[in-house]
Length: 240
Image 1: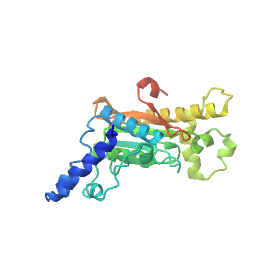
Image 2: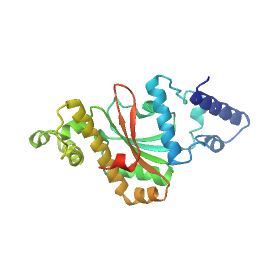
Image 3: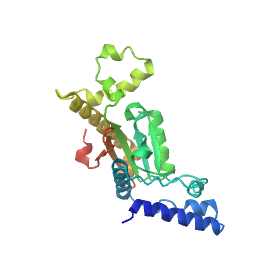
Image 4: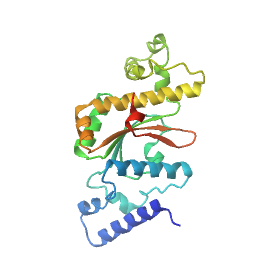
């Protein structure tokens, strides 16, 4: 049986090509994109499905056609915003097998909520009508590891890096004693994901949008080794 994602990508390519042949405007072509993602729940499912394709080696890569690229000339219509770490091993669009214009990605070390990142997410919410905001952390995050260091070690880092590390420190300050280093690191990263998601959910603009059902704020933990993302979706999963 043909893969559903491949069928959807092929159908989009066909509809865009048909529209171009009819002489459709770029605005009309842009309207053909992402019509099936109209709710936060659909956005979550799209990310889950895309990640399943990624870690199973069945990626669709829907953006390869020139006609599909032309559909984005007039603007962007991403369905989700992702606050992710800058780590080069975490290419967000690849991890979720998403094409051009589908994800609005903000990347900063440790996926921390700072002024520039928050302003960028405000833009995505107010002007791009995203359905979802995800905080995406990952296995072996160096920024989180730095937040676990003694204060004298942190004080040796450059000024702005110290500031970034201190945005993470509250999430790992009361980390329980865990002898297994890998398990301890995973727990630290998860705590930071929850902490940053909590900060986002306290922001008035995001809080009101979530309360109205316009968006959802969720978390994700990416395992570099397997390629799989563990989703933190429910309130209990996100509780700091």
